Every structure is written in C-alpha cells, then in structure tokens.
Image (cartoon, rainbow, N blue to C red; front, side, top):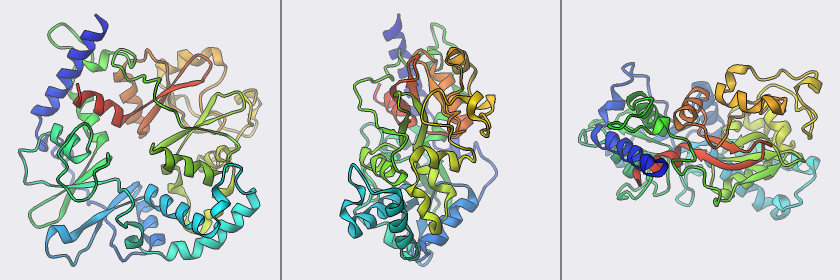
Length: 393
C-alpha cells in the first residue's frame, strides 16, 4: 500500500544513515582538495572574491593564531550572511527603503552605490556577530564513531539533535571536519549525505528492500501544501526580494509573472556573481537580475513571452530539464525558466524522489518547486525537508 510502504522505505533510509560511519563520505572523495577558508581580518570584498574564485558559496572562518581549536574555528561566512548585513545597513540609513512599495529603482541604485565602498571595507569578523545565524558547523573527525545520522541530527541540526556545539542551533547545510591538529580536513554538506543515499539505496523497491527512491514526493508526504510558500512578483526590486528571502527563513523564493505562474527561482546564491562594487544591480527588478546573472535577457512579464518570441534569448538547454519534467511541460509550449534563461527545476507531485534528488545533484541546487499543470507553485521540496522526513521517520 501507499503510505505504509512509504513509511517502511523511510525507515530503511534512516537505518542506512544510522549504520554508516562519517568515514563513508570522507573516503568517498580521495582527492584531498584543500578546504577554502577565510580569516576574521579579511575584508568582505576580498573574502567574497575568494569564495567566487574557488566557486563555493561559503567558507569556514579560521583564526590561524588560535591555539585551541575552539579559538581557531571562528564561524562561517556565506552570501546569506553578507546579505543580512547589507539589508541591515540599508535599514539603518533609510528605514523606509525596504517598505512594501519600496524605493524607485533610481533611488535604490543611489543608496546601494553609497553603501558599496563602506560595505566592502567591513571585515569578515564584522559579518559574523553573535546575532546572525551562520550556515555551518564544525565536527571533530576523530569521532569516527560518529554516524551519518549523527551528522544530520547533531551537525546539521535536522530533526531533534542534541545541540552541544557552540556555533549554531539552526539548521545548517554543511559542517567542516577538523583533525587533532585543528586543521580542516573536509567539508561535508547535505548534498554529500543525499548523494550517499542515492548511491547506496536500491533504485527500485521490492518487498524486502523498500526504497524511497522509487516513491513519489506525494507518497512520502513531501508535498506539504499547508506550508506557506514565499513568492514574489517579477517586477519587485531585487533588494526587496532579498529581504523577503531572509525574512522567510528559506533559502529561496519563487518569482511569479502576472498570471501567477512560476518563471524563476531566486536565492542568495544568485549573488555569487556580483562584485561588491556593483551592488547597484540589486536595484533591478528581480526577474531581470536573475536573467542578468544567467547571461540572458528577460523575455517579458507574461507567459506569452515564450521562447519563440523571445528573440535575443537563448532557451536553456534541454539537459537542464529532467526527462520526466519535460513530458509534463510539452503542453505548456515552453521550458520552465526560459523567461530568465535559468534552469528552473520544477516537478509534478507524482515525481519519484530518486528523480528529484538526481535533478538536485546534477544541477547543484538545494530545492525544487512542485507545480501543477498550469505552472502554479504548490510546494517547495528542499534537501533539508527530505533529510528531515528521513530522520524523523
């Protein structure tokens, strides 16, 4: 049957995590890529440039002069943190700037221009005060007894974990493992855990071996229609959309056109391509900003601006869309995300979890949108929600 089979499959995935030691993902990547770190005294401008050069979204902040590992591991820097600080700075200067009606584009541009210099000169230490949640944690690699279930519960804080670390009690996406010398050995992310599950669970179920990979999102209870979706109109200024992102506590918001159809996904990760000296682009309408980041032009605020009439817009390549979602959209006459040239990964509610995870891993994204036949968003499924469903099963 549907639900009880799903329960057994979730239980089986949980057992797999409970039986796998931390080394199962540590050894999976033999090549010891150096962990990218930043120092507390680095300027924000330099640190973000470093993240971009290394193509990572976040990095542990390490104080090399620290003698104990507690002194060495200062915290985590990521784009979301920088965003929170930027929004705070805007509010401090112009409290009304982020109101619902928001500033005009030109006002916003001027304000961001004024802030740029000072903001870039702030240090990493300025970013990571106690009052901002950081998206990362640290774990001692010597705890070889530590299982992947421990990592999810006590490292990522998903499900009920015992919170003993001093860094973060909120859900985080990654942890850094350090050795006895206090050197960082490896970053382990939610992505690694899901890749481990995809690799080690059977693709299809049979009686003795139920697998979540062959169950639909709906079956597994992942299509939660009661949870408020965070959606913004395409014409909202990017800086206001960022404010929505941060206030919602989600890593992404959906962008809707005038018909209420989902045309793009926007997250703080989209900021990775901009320089602090170019903060002015955050005054653009969010759909235009996403297009800019993906190197295309926004083809209009209505569904009729489909690929065919877009002219200068390159449609996203078919590889971006998984096969199962393609069939679903043939009758829509366009590829999701084609308005902004961004691979917008959307899934019908009966998509199998194995396919959804594959889409996440292939496209390096943390969440997908579940939509109905009319491209209206129903729910968001994130890596965190999948792991949460498994560990609380």
